Image (cartoon, rainbow, N blue to C red; front, side, top):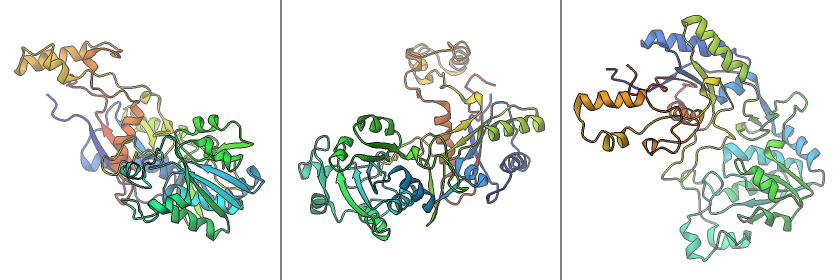
Length: 394
């Protein structure tokens, strides 16, 4: 019997810069790691590449001035209401700088007590202490300062109201804060709206159909400005701060890359692997309550073999119920028979209770994000062996 199931390996590639041939780098790095570390490349193994190096190699960057110029065109009145931006220097501060440079006045509506992905303005318990109803109450900066002014983010030590105020001040842009969980409240202040939320953006746009202008971050920088990068599908969603004046965008190209790597590995080894590009994983931190997924999707590009959701039975359920009278080798043998004979679609069956009903790319992307991290590990490529194996595979 095989003693190891799924294995995830971070693959070191060296630092990747604009203009580098990423397909060559990924293929050569995987083949070299396989040889040096002694693991075999097998059919249906997975090669995953972090979205950052995809955009870097393609030079998909925009400047703060590019953003400002796009904002000026799309919000010519010189004011804009920003609805539900997340609390993040990495994700939003550069975007805000560009917006502030493009208008004279910003009305910023922050959801509370936390943003869409779980970054907290203040602790939930304070809602009870100050008798604030997050489902109905909206308030402005005076109320915020009365109760929450000195509160800082648990992990970053930052007060984001102060940070965003300072960004706008340096760009000579007035900012007015509104704290509300009802996007319609922004219409009391302005009719020109930019929805800054990520996963709920379409709902927000729909609820604000009475606005004169209603766009989302996915509608900004969808075309190149004077040779800049762009993303026709996601705009500024998924962007990261690169320098004080430059942002890296979410990949706009990737299908050719994943298919090219798949073909190259097959030519070199005779094995058909699956390939994906991944960004944030889709998991939530139990302490900070932060939902990791600040990108619009976990995986923007992947090969066809990664479509779908897992179709697995729950070993514990089968062991405790159908095979409760068996033990030892007899139990193991019967369990493998049940796995081999399982239906192609287990949805709704008790034997699948407790398995995770999520897309394969979201599950694998989360594994990759945890493997590679976002810091200094130097492994922007992840190699996963045995993900599609089960207990019955020898």
